[in-house]
Length: 69
Image 1 (cartoon, rainbow, N blue to C red):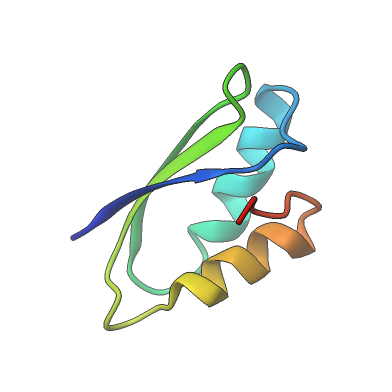
Image 2 (image 1 turned 135 degrees about the vertical axis):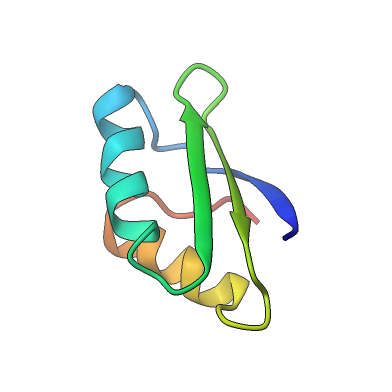
């Protein structure tokens, strides 16, 4: 499982991280999601054969936390 770290500048607190975790772990083959509001990053493990990075980024954006590109 690859592990990636994404920057999301709109993350400001632990509640933000919890919202992202709840939404992203609903996707297939996302096994781990953690975040740090201080550095505004989310780290996750996922199976790229089952879910695309675009899908993950889309869910984060729907939650109000777009990924910095």
